[in-house]
Image (cartoon, rainbow, N blue to C red; front, side, top):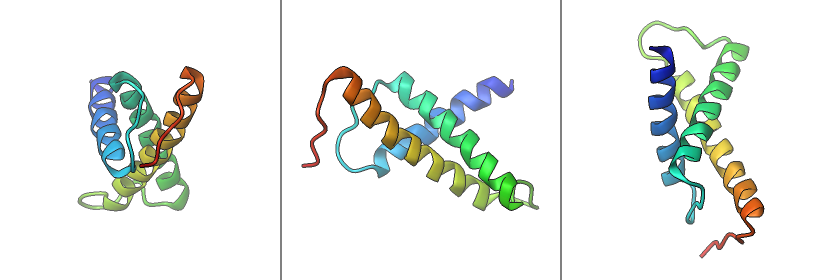
Amino acid sequence: MSWLWAIIVGFVLGLIARAILPGKQHQPLWLTTIFGIIGAVLGNAVATWIGVNETRGIDWIRHLLQLAGAVAVVGLGDLAYGSMRGKKSQTT
């Protein structure tokens, strides 16, 4: 069941990250989901590192760190995907 939650959270975080990033991202939806999962894992690692991974109630700081990780990974992943596919990103 944890894999299912990881996929769902990665999908949602990837979509939110794509909405936050300016411009159009060119990676497919499945790759956005993988980038979201990686971003969530990175956010959890940072939350554990700074000691806020388990708090009472809703872990807002951990969730914000997961979102920040997803934004970073989706942004960098889009650049890498675009360079592999030979597409140049347009910032207009």
